[in-house]
Length: 175
Image (cartoon, rainbow, N blue to C red):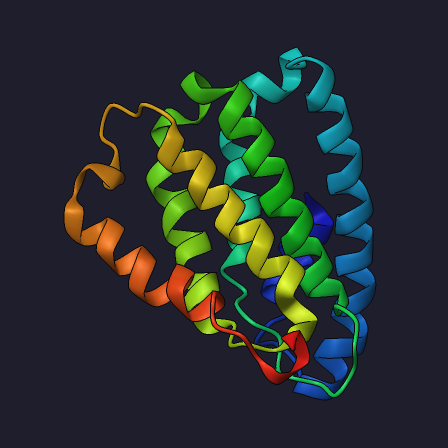
């Protein structure tokens, strides 16, 4: 929790170059912790998780709200993007297994992943992040939520137009 708060708080507290190196270490730590949390919640819902789900969801949403990493000419994901992939992967699993516990937070989750996906661009480097994000949205759309944002036709149209269709086009690297 402390590492997550430090990573999110560091966003504006230091120059960008220093932010990147200091935060990358925090993002790697959070990535490892998120993998462990995913594995723990994959088997069954630990009592402490159920009691603190709001804290976990808010932390995950904060990570997604950090947005896109400034483009670099590298072929692999940067630590923030790897963490965001893992967050989307874990949330996708939780949506399928712990629907009742996530119901109060689903709007916040959908909004965060939607905002992330619409700012990512079309770099080949972030294909896996886009895939995890779209998979999360798809999992959310497949569930029956009491106040489902997917009941609104304009929401579905916007997702198709601004997220799905732009990511279906072929790029030169795809040919």
